[in-house]
Amino acid sequence: MATTLPLADLSDRAREIFRLAVEGYLASGHPVGSKTLAGAINLSPASIRSVLSDLEVMGLLGHPHTSAGRMPTDIGLRLFVDGMMQVAEPTAEERAAIERQVSTPGPLEAALAAASSVLSDLSAAAGVVMVPAGEPRLAQLSLVPLNAGRALAVLVGADGTVENRVVDLPAGLPPGALEAASNYITRHLAGRTLAEAAAAMRADLASGRSALDLASADLVQRGLAVWSEDAAQGPVLIVRGQANLLDEAALNDLERIRQLLDELENKRAVADLLDRARDGTATRIFIGSENRLFALSGSSVIAAPYRGADGRVVGVVGVIGPTRLNYARLVPIVDFTAQSLGRLIG
Image (cartoon, rainbow, N blue to C red):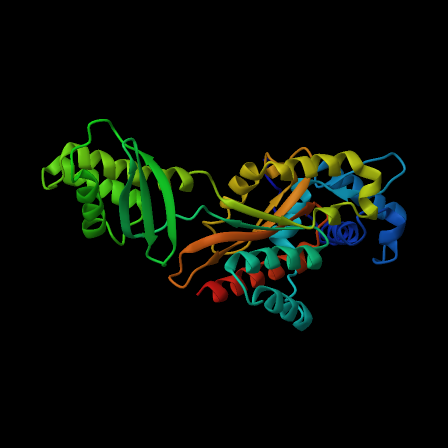
């Protein structure tokens, strides 16, 4: 990513014209010309064109067509977002719509889908919610024989969930091995995540503290592995409102929108990008070529983490759309949605 010029490098006149050009573009989705700007600032079109040319040389504005006005580059948008944008708080109506959708009775998955939908509605772009793959904490794990070669592993999570998996058994398994493995997991590994349980068992075996024989230890590993594989399959990604991307302004740039829709299909890559917002304390903005995934379509992402009752990040919520998103309005909306999900989970 190219380095953005500091605002101090711009004169007061250049800063004001740049601000007006960016705000005009974000409001209309179209390049802004000198005649349009002349109606908002007390300068002649010729003087404005001179400043626009200077801003273009600096790499802050682009000139897409010979007869068109200017539009901000990704570097220009970054300068505007970081140093000039005046963030507006969500309106009472917007807050009420978010709270109403997120707090709809039902399973958590429904609330997450509702959050994605309301963000899509409010932004006229695509709303997205990412939930990392869950890793249950063990309460109990029982291994029940099915036949000579297989057993049913019944896992009871600390949250009360119950799941079953079929486990392949090694040949020549001694009597009592299944019961010994089940008892070990319940007594010694309860309350741990799958990864923590596997690490604790390995430490017990290495130190000689474990009373498990090799056959039972192998069964414990097999029992834990079937859920570890599921947890490693990746995060859950909920995307709503892709049709919003096909608005009137997009009709002249259908190839870019097709590219964006293709990029949204790569849910693993989208989740990896959103995951970069997990470590932030505030809403993150990824503009155009700043992220490799959406560089081809020239799209932007506004994302914020949401947290559980213990303060740990649970997932990420956000908006994906063209670079002409209304950042000043959407940043606080995304942030408020993240806070609402956090209160729901807490």
